[in-house]
Length: 113
Image (tube, rainbow, N blue to C red; front, side, top):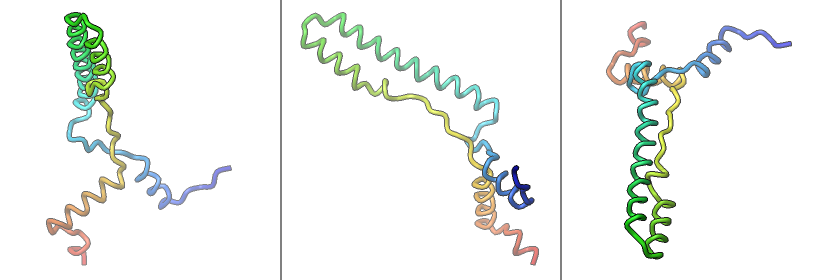
């Protein structure tokens, strides 16, 4: 059996589990940007590989082939991938908001006193 949570425990759990988008875009824009960024990364990787393959076709000697293989393996385009950034936990977002309010002099607790 699970024990019941107090309201304070529920609030702490909510602060840990709930997340907010702090990337700077609206929700729908973020969803579209994820797809676009994945497409752009894949497109640049294919472009880079095509350039290397064209160099291979132009190169007939073995030394050139070995250098092209090494270039493909150490290609920065191959290592560059798109990674999503997770949303920020609610407790971090609230802490930032409060610290920003204190910084500009909008400390609510001081005014209440």
